[in-house]
Length: 124
Image (cartoon, rainbow, N blue to C red):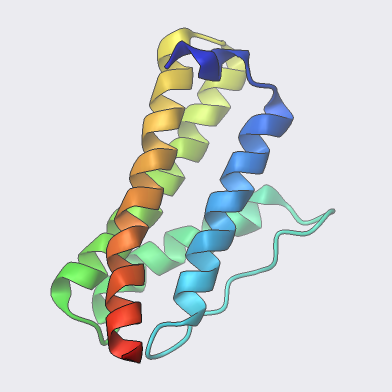
């Protein structure tokens, strides 16, 4: 996984924003839709972080089966951890931090699949 160490700050941020957008789209499709701020130029990244943190806080209150709420919470928590690891990595570019970032992003996206599958089954 050490290929991640060679990525630029823009690469890391691009991956974070892509994952954020997936979480945002999924949240917009929930039985009670949740709107997240749009990641646009000039917006503080902290606003996106705070929005994901809020979703993780309220995930158990969303009217979905418990495993789906847990998966949303997990996705958000991994996303927040990826950002924290990214911040540490930018201060000290150690290989294990790049690998940890990759694992957190992939964990976030993987957990979100459970929510997406449930949403798809509800559409049938």
